[in-house]
Amino acid sequence: MQQHYINKPWWNKLIFFGREDGHLSKAQLDLLERKIIEKMKRAEIELDNNTQGNQSYIDKLSQFSALSLLSKVERVLIDIANINLFASDDTKFDRVDPTPNNDTISILFGGQHYTGSSYRDVFTKLVSTLVLSSDIAKLTDLINSTEPNTVQILGTLERVSGKGTKLTKAIDSSKYHVYVNFSKDALYKKIQILAHLTNNKVTFERW
Image (tube, rainbow, N blue to C red; front, side, top):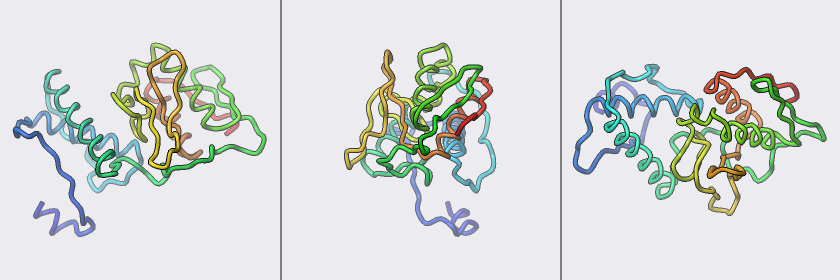
């Protein structure tokens, strides 16, 4: 921290976390670092650290323990401190669904057409199809065990802002809710992420 204080004068706040018993192995710390870097890059947050994080062997039990800790930390930050580490400028609460002027939105994803009256409508239809298919297994990094957020867009609980704005939509015939409170550009980026994770080609026909 002293080196950062001397060599990186742009920062003025610090958030740190750990286990109460102090038991975190180097492999767990490396995993947590990699996951946080991945989440910030997905949110298109500019990082001073350009590395991918260290690669260390980690057994499944240690991995589960580390990721459970990270999930708890994220919930405490959001629910108690009102801090979303992975939020970008596109994720401000927006009561108005971004919708074009009387045009139908259309994309071609994995050879299937998705159309709707708004960008969020098309996004929700696409995510619903993926969740109800075998592709759900490829979306584990996007799933939160509780409420979805701007990075883990799928969760098992509905999410509502402090002002009462519904930020998610329920996916029929599933236990999931999908976070939809994104701008047009942010939805475009999220769809590209979905295409990458599921190895599908996407064409934005009318966007």
